[in-house]
Length: 131
Image (cartoon, rainbow, N blue to C red; front, side):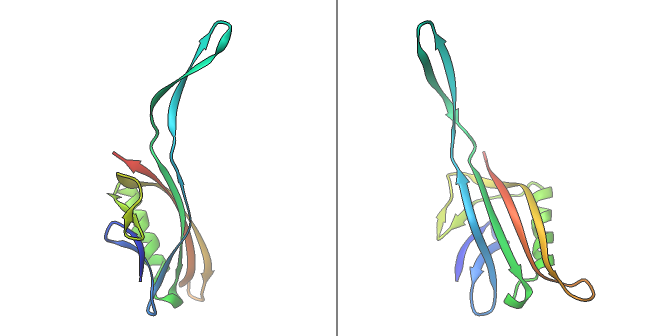
């Protein structure tokens, strides 16, 4: 069953055949404010604009669960380095109003078998809204 997706190539899913797990999703929504000093009074705040939203999550890949970690890492690397942007969808609903870009990713190669075959890996992905 699909958990969500980022575009059409990255699909977070869990089924009897395979699992590409999404864990620890955090999202930051903020705004920029100006502070104006006033003589003898508290500072006055002025709303400037909303900030770009941020999202961070970990993807867990395991060859025994039907996902080839090395292939998925290379796909993410290509998407990051070519500036790919896509909607981020979780549970059938878009996260935020706009598309998302990958700012960076950090890989952990958890289990490497004889011959260098990557059995299990996790990738921490940092995204930002793209307008």
